[in-house]
Length: 488
Image 1 (tube, rainbow, N blue to C red):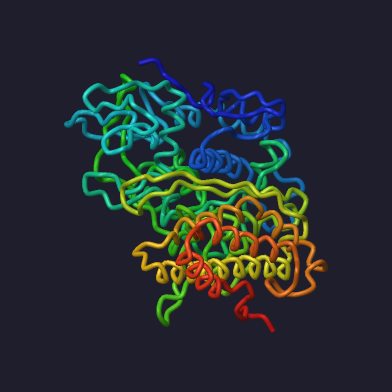
Image 2: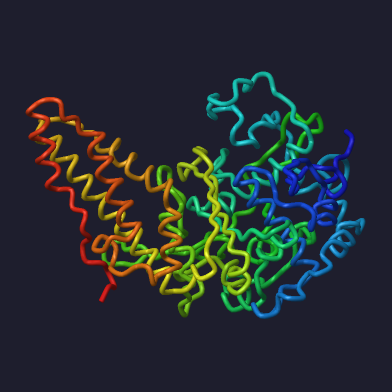
């Protein structure tokens, strides 16, 4: 089997400023990092690739002590990273096939036949994966994939795949709880990589990495403490190997075993791109990662990402460590990317989501984030009022299923298209004379109009009974706010 080495062979999808898209090798990604505009891939692939690039960077350049020391950090990354990857011992670790060490693979028993290679790719039809966008899936006739596709799929699989067969209870560290990942975007790839590195202060003071900064998994020797070093150190977790597998030489499958490495979840080891939120469960406060949800646009949770809140415990509610490491740089870059892969929290993959926000420089000021939070809360209160109106409309007509979901969908769809109004208003608070729902600011007008439009378009008025039901439901459409929590 001819070898395919990720250091020299192109496999990373990138986009240049002129719009040209192509594949580059790891060497080229670093060597041309000032010329490459951005990665060009799916959300889970972006997170996985960025973790790999950051891991190599922070191995070559140890994390700076604090967030005040970024100016001279990794200024010669283009040459130093290439020198690191050219080391024969390091380069061997990036072989996809062939003899010797392989990238994110380990020897496993080949007693059973190989699993189809397409199982590494979430949108390909294999097993119980849907054939909606792929009609080539056939477990009896395995397909082969090009090495560059296998490389990216393998990296993403080790980062994101959920519970996966043979009694294995672990999951990829990036998919725990459908956590939403946040990354900063620079003007070119080099700047983006630097912006997603974190400080030594956060790594050590957080006490979430019991093995400290550590080393990348390809530098950790297979000794009794291998799993601990790989899963509880910062660099070890960045490029995970949560499943023991070995690609078959015919490129059509891979061998996998139930035994593997289990990665501690967010309450024991936190991902730098995750946001921790506090939710009330009865009388108890529960901390968990901010999750992506089907049917809920990411802008509605943007204030949770930007809160810049730290408590005595670093794993308490707070913004991603990536943002905490670059508070001043973010004000000049102001490009924020969020996204993830969504599962049913078991073994089924549902979808991917992503959003990119261009935020005003002052958006991260605590007072402005609070304004944004209140704007979202006002919209959610109006949404609840719309729900009550539709239920009352349906009761008047004795409908078993009034068009509640249709109205809610229409309401939020309108706000999804215009959420930049709230972003810009939050960064210019002097234009907000009264609180949302009381004054006549652009966001209040937008929310009110969205609610009225959703109600009118889902409540027909063609008969006297319908007119009466329409009027009855309209009485419950409250467009003035309830008392806002924390508002004096």
